Amino acid sequence: MNLKNLFFLLITIGLFTACSKEDPQETIDKYIADNNLDAQSTDEGLYYVIEKEGTGKRPVFNSDVKVHYEGSLTDGSVFDGNLSTPISNVGYFNLTRVISGWQLGIPLFKEGGEGLLIIPPDLGYGSNPPGGSGIPKNAVLVFEVKLLDVR
Image (cartoon, rainbow, N blue to C red; front, top):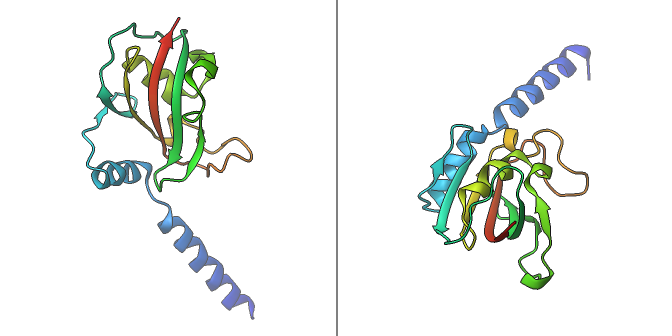
């Protein structure tokens, strides 16, 4: 292959790669439409669905919370969760120690509340997902959450 053909091939691959990257907002809009969700959004770009209001306390930014959850990508691939863990074995965590999407989203629920968080990359892991997590760079994350307790 001569240099001219190699250059053309590299430009073509570069254009294809640039064009094939889906805009996170398009991914979110498609996910919401495909799943017929009545999602709300925050000013920060987090989308959420409250499926069950809940009746207890609402957490604040530094609350310790106990949450049953499942994290997946928009294609349905599950990457994390504790839904199979008995509620008595689910631990507490502090909201200051989680991704921004959870810091903004979990306080939208009251204890006993259930719903979805649809988190754009800039409120999730962005270009630095945890190694071995199965989360690609700049992925939109979907979390099914059940807020069990707030303290």
